[in-house]
Length: 415
Image (cartoon, rainbow, N blue to C red; front, side):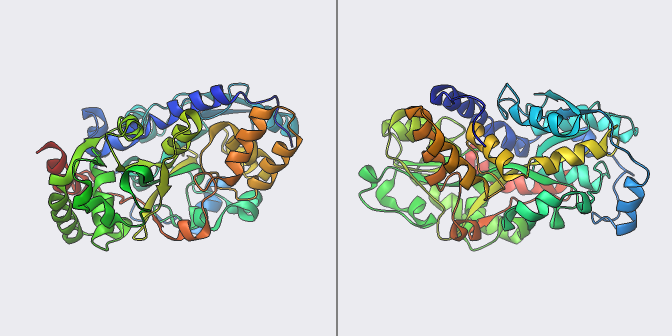
């Protein structure tokens, strides 16, 4: 496999920076969604008694369904090369056309948009969509709005997905979703400023860095690090853990320069921050674009892995085609093509060999250098040791549960 055309690194950087700017939007849902979203989340009498589909439920959904000749695919902006080379390959291989729309701007508003149609058992106009692990994903499962996946029709996923992506705490057994791309929340720091190598969440509480420490303003991201600092896993945490984590974060507050959204990346670049909570893609792009020497680490206590996931709405008009397309993205050469453009963590480890091959074949010096950066970066291909330290986000059981969680962490930012 080789790129469809030489990749302009400047274009690539601009697109991925745009994408990373939306991590703020993804997590702002934890601050409280719009009234429409909260109303949708509060729908009564719709939730299923269990989130685990029985084998007969899977068989019942897929029985008699055949592949149509068009797939309507809803995704986020800047999450695929505008030329859609991967979709063209899928159409060439199957004869099935894909109508690809950048229809999703954030999870809360997307959920609010599609919930009325799904509640009425009507098509939302899409056969495949990408939603982040978190509150909205949990609501989609609990309300019975997602098709149970037939893993007999996902051979590429079975063969090529990384082990971490087959052990999702928010969707055990990948019953309703498989990952599209991922990223890490960890620590970034400037070693020239800190004067030493950092390894631990404890460094974010170090008085030596007072006024030079950045933390995220989003309560879920902030809460995650508080939980990890007190030895609690975010995905299985309870209210007692939230209280301990909030107390720990209150101790840290006098040391913190500011609670940030996306703006932290500029301040660590200009020296106003020395150490901060950070998203892996931001640091990768900052170093690539501006030549900074920032370091990113998954602290020894752990970090978090966010995942944007492909799933099929229960009312999809062509679920068979959607399932085939989901599996197509798990071919290593296709996963490599996506990673070369997107610059996020691919769920297909075997993509690395194809990216290396593309770099070896490239005659364009800038493209070769960009591809080799991808191959060698632990921010794109984390080590097994890093993956072992990554946790999922806490998934609220309902709206009240989410409000309770937020009540511990929002005051730290706003108070």
